[in-house]
Length: 459
Ligand SMILES: [Fe+2]
Ligand SMILES: [Fe+2]
Image 1 (tube, rainbow, N blue to C red):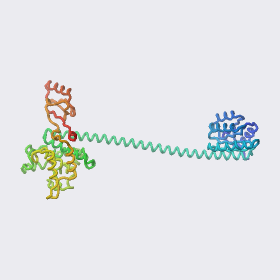
Image 2: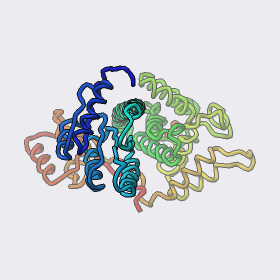
Image 3: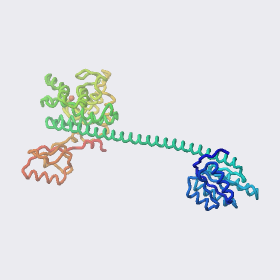
């Protein structure tokens, strides 16, 4: 027997016989267990376990019936699931019953995953002490392993939580970035919109035909860009802007030069006319850099032809891609709505002329970028029969305003009093309001109403 030492583990010793309990008590005290708990009845044993659920070990002596033993072990499993157990069974009396009882317990306890041993009475103190120490050691190692596994699980959980948290933070950052980019882009769109609106409004006052031409060219450039679905190469919003700006250099052309068909211009007029792309770039020199850099080349080259017959004699890929698109749309618009190349003509005829000029068998070369021309012609084919020129903002008198009309410009009195803002849909109430202003002696002379471009594609 080993020397006496101090063991802090709580143990419970139970046997129906006081003598057995006392013997066990002495043995475990001698082994160094500070205060072995004892019980002489099942109720006492249960009471001890209820109030000492941190028991490390219990030793139960065999009772009168196997049912009693099983009941006590079930209770010990419930109350002290971490404790290890030793079952002391009797070897006197009915051997087969004892054997059956201990077998049943062994299987049952093993199934519970507990550390459990069965020891016959009378026991050998040294062997029992050694068994207990081995079981405690095994339990200690098992606990240690469980602790390590638990620590590993905790670490893993912490790592997972950290990853989840990082992912959530990343998601949040991405969302803030997206929303920032969206608001920047909205702000840019708003500022671009107000820029083009301002230019169109000024063109409208300076030269109504020029404004209409610019607006239509901007509209169709944007439509083709949307259809191309290559926003990196053809951003629709910028194509709209460049379409609107392409002829801004014509703003101060003398009316006779502006209105004359090309072939009727004399050399001086021709020179002034040909200078309009360069003049546009000069006029737009104060535009924000990010727009100016993008619109310079398309504006300068918008009269170039793929066959090199344009004023700058550039060929095919030498011509800016946006300029190639403006060139097509611009020519169509002149055929359709202006007198630059004769009387304005219908949509079908204008399309036929474009196709005819697209390729010259003699030169074995076309004037227009075939891919862009195809997209444009297909879009024209899809557009309905509404007259495009009727889709421009119209100037009307106050008396001509009807409910449902949408204002294309802010409505001011001649004394600069804002009456209604652009975009307002005229209602009966607004008609009454306007009449009141007029009755008060106010005058209104610039009334522009909007037509909806999108009607073009309505079936
Ligand atoms: Fe032009
Ligand atoms: Fe033009």
